[in-house]
Length: 456
Image 1 (cartoon, rainbow, N blue to C red):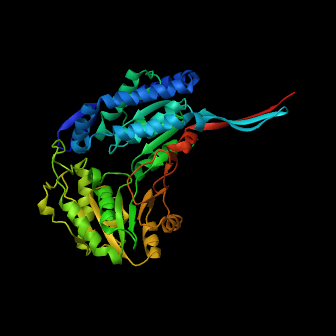
Image 2 (tube, rainbow, N blue to C red):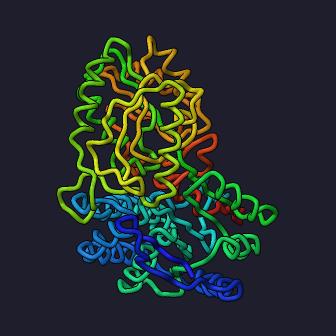
Image 3 (cartoon, rainbow, N blue to C red):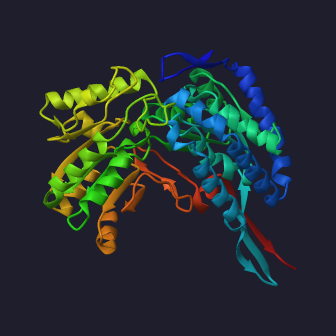
């Protein structure tokens, strides 16, 4: 039995029984059996059904928003995830015909040579709790549009989200045998992956869990797409507006209580802008209201679980004991020592500290001064992760030169913590492998088939 424990008050918000191995295998077999019939439908019809499912989800926003607050703590004032879901699914529907069309090499009287894109089969999506709809739709929408069938497993922390997503698609006309939500424990999940019954596994979560999935898939030749978090840096360059940079980077560090895959965890500031950047950053954070996410006045909700909050507290306490300084008076916030965690800005930090090296995923950001671009690049690259980096500057050419040196999947200029569906969402190093959205997202959910026909 899976239990979602609410970070609001520690109550059990929802429970669901898990499937047995045989029952999970039966779901995979059903999806395999339905895949060719689904793929035989016209592309336009599949895309239209997906977009109807997205629209149906939007009609449930009044239910989804408080449900997410209860399950993972995001304040209701920020609404749900529907606008992002619509943007991502809509873009993938719009580009589907172009992305999936055959690549014609030759069409002459002598030869026809082309490369087709064919669906892989059954796509297994394992989505996280921090943005359960947004992260799921990255793969669900293009997978279904491309002619695959989909099995989805959500996080226990947001137990009801993937169940609701599947239901909205079914209500919109996507057949139940084409898109199935499942509740599985870890052992059954690994056994299912290891059985070879799946044709692609997409996972967003921790490095440890990603390694377990790779081990489970070993020898099956099942492709795996992994997004395993980050320690994303921001760099405030000497020509930047320090106040505007603080507005962008602090929001990217603290939104959703810092529980964003591409949230900013490290900030490097050119020494000439050090004090004005810090002054603005402190004023922003001091204006936050930590409290019950169901209260519309709350701007900072609890972390999703006590375990996550304790990890951040431990990292912060260790850094303070090693010489770091906190700029925020935690007593000004309703920090209860549990899931409600006061935000913090740390200075006098070094890369010897775990808080600068290990993923935190919480409302604490660390700020270091730098004297040059070279120093900033070296520090930004000094990480086991590589998801995004944000450059604050007025000089696009300088930003492009630095971007070429960064070991990361996405480089932003004058923005952060955003996923552009027209661009490939990807990472390097311990952030994982693969890529979602954009034309490349379709390529990862299909396989090439070459036709070489000699005429006459």
